[in-house]
Length: 493
Ligand code: NAI
Ligand code: MG
Image 1: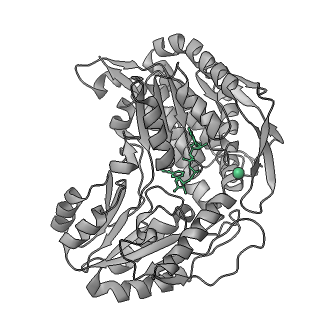
Image 2: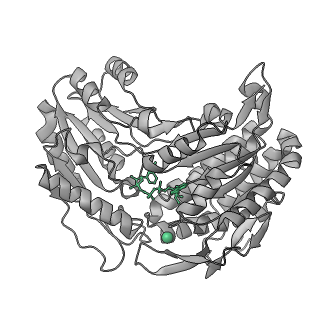
Image 3: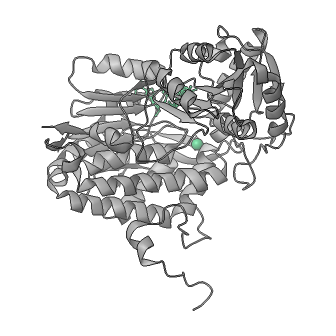
C-alpha cells in the first residue's frame, strides 16, 4: 500500500459515518475559486438575465475573490419555475430514495471538507479552525440527520400524514453560510419540497460550490436552485407567488418587513432573527469553566453569532474576580489571518459590519461604560476588530440592548437569582441564554423562567442537528433542527 493510498474505513463508518473523525482524502485540495459565478437554475449554471455581477471580497485582506451574478426578478422567476417543475417527481419519490440523495450529499461534503472549509474562511473571514472543525462537519451532520428522517416521516407525527409544502424560498445570512444552507436545505428536501435559496451577498461562494456538489450527487435538476444577489433579490424571493413558505435567517428589521409583506398571503413563514443573549454566572459556578464559556460565547466566529452570549450577567459577589479572569484569558486570544490555524479571532465579515461594531463600541464609552480592549497588532489590510469587553454596563445603554454582532461583551451585575432573570428577560430578543451554577435545581428553576428558545447550562454554543433551535419575541418564530424544525417544512394531514 503506497503512502498515498487511503486507509480503508471500518464498515460502521461507511454505513453511518463517523461524523466527527472522518478524515477526508485529498488533504492537498486547493479550493478552486472561479473568477465568475453564474446562477444555478434547473440543474444548470445559468447566466443572469440581469447581465449584472457584483464582487465578493475576502475580509481577510479586502481583495476581490470572485464576481457573483446579481439575480433580478426574471432570474428569481426562472428559479421558481424550475423548482415548481421539479416538485411533482421529487415529492412523489419514496422517502428512502430522497434519503439516498441526502446521504450522498453529506458524504460528498465530507470528501470535499477541506476545500469547503478554506473557501468559507476566505470568503467570510472566520478562523480556519472553526470552518474546519465546526461549520463543515456540522453542515454534513445536518444532511445525515435529515437523510435518516426521509423514510421515517410517518413516525414524526403519529396518526398524521406528512405532505410537503411545495416550493420553498430560503434566505440565509453571512455568518455561517454553508451551515445555514444545510439547516435550510436538508429538512426541506427530506420532506419532499423543492427550493429556491439566496445566500448572503458577502458570502455566496460556498453556496455556488455546493451547486457542483449537488450535480455530483445526481440530484434531479430544479430540486435546488441558487440565486445570488442582495436585498432586491431577497425581496423577489419573498414576494414570488409560487413560494409556499419562506424561511429567513438575518436581521430583525428585514424579518419584520418579510412578516409584513407576507401577511394575509397564507404563505408559511419561519424567522430566525437576532439576539442579545444573557450568559448568567452564579456565585457557585465552576469559575474557570465559566470563563471558557464566556470567551467562547462571545468570541466564537468574531461574535457574528445570533445566539452569542453578548450580555454577561455576573453575581455581584464574584464580579471582580470574573472580570480579572476574563481579562487574563483574553490575553491569550490570537487575532489575525483567518487562514492561520492558530487564529482564534478572524476577520470581520464586511466593512459595513466593521463600521456598525465601531459605532456601537463608541456609544458604549460615550454612555459611561468602562472599556477593556485587547492590546494587539492587527493585519494592515482587511477588516479586523480587537476583542473588547465593557464593565459597569447598565440596561439602558445601547451596548446592553442592541445586537452588536461583533467581538464585544457587555458585563452587568445582579444580586439575586430573581434579579438575574429579570435582567436577562429585559430585552426585545429571546433566542438563547446560558446559566452557570453547580446547583442542578437552580439551573432547572431558572431555565424555565428565561424567555429564550435555547438555554445552555454549564456550556455555551453547543449545537446538534437533533436539537431544535429558534427564538421568541424579536428573535423570530419557528424552529430549525430536530423533529420540530423538520415539521415546519410539512403539512400535517
Ligand atoms: P440582513 O438581514 O440585511 O441580511 C440577511 C439576508 O437577508 C441576506 O441574504 C440579505 O441579502 C437578505 N436581505 C436583505 N434585505 C432583504 C429583503 N428586503 N428581503 C429579503 N431578503 C433580504 O442583515 P445584514 O444587513 O447583513 O446585517 C445587519 C445586522 O443584522 C447584523 O449586524 C446583525 O445584527 C443582524 N444579523 C443577524 C443574523 C442572524 O443570524 N440572526 C445574520 C445576519 C445579520
Ligand atoms: Mg466575501
